[in-house]
Image 1: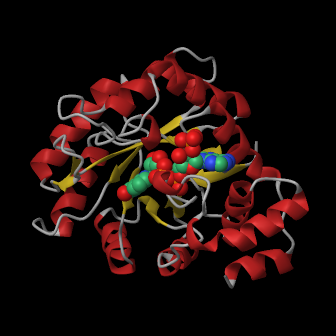
Image 2: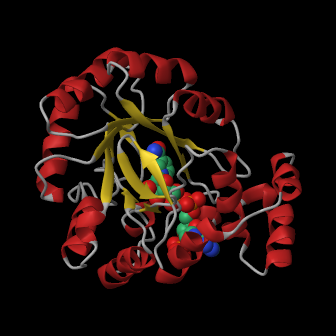
Length: 285
Ligand SMILES: NC(=O)c1ccc[n+]([C@@H]2O[C@H](COP(=O)([O-])OP(=O)(O)OC[C@H]3O[C@@H](n4cnc5c(N)ncnc54)[C@H](OP(=O)(O)O)[C@@H]3O)[C@@H](O)[C@H]2O)c1
């Protein structure tokens, strides 16, 4: 398995996104555990999750609990970097709400620590800026948790270039990752990707395949990916992930899966090499 770096940790160049296994439309637990174990079998050593990856109001941290269970029952569990997040809430009506207050961030981090059963969280990401709370206060709360040793590395998510610079400054240069939406049909995070490349900060594209609701579709950009896929005899999703990996060594896509087959297929993207012409063609879509 090819690797990339998040901070000082070497991780597989592709990670597993845990969200489809815990929100609306999720599979049963046995299939989810099989999916996570399939990811570990292929050599993936990064799993993205969040306390807010749950469906009902009374099951906060459903995905973290699932991941902890899967890691505890696989020999490669200890090798995995679990990247969780705090700052989003799900009241149980299908919506996503925000609380970026320092008090909530601290409480959420401590609850994640308990669910993951670790002394320190490998990578803790501030999930999304809360317009009701100054960004510096939210990021400052995560910095305090880092200074206290409750988390080992800090990332942010859904941030613009100014917020990336601001967060890195508040953290004294210790920001290790930015997780933003980026896929063939959603490319407006290119400036953040370029800034991360410049700063040497990992960039984790979320919904890299166009999201759960468009699973397998890659949105409006499907056709050129499918054409190049058929020339290589692979899936369009694999081409999509290979295209992202080729953009910069800081890119670490985190495709979501709820089936062993899909994460196996996605993991194989690390071995797919596109020609410069193919990448340029996909860039221009
Ligand atoms: N930071 C944020 O605000 C934020 C927001 C959204 C998501 N995320 C993170 O990003 C991760 C990825 O995003 P996502 O799960 O929303 O969407 P995604 O990765 O774009 O798409 C996931 C869907 O694609 C399908 N799929 C995966 N690999 C495939 C393959 N090789 N061939 C065919 N289909 C494939 C999966 O199908 P099956 O379910 O059938 O396996 C799944 O339903 C999430 O799981 C989550 O960890 C973060």
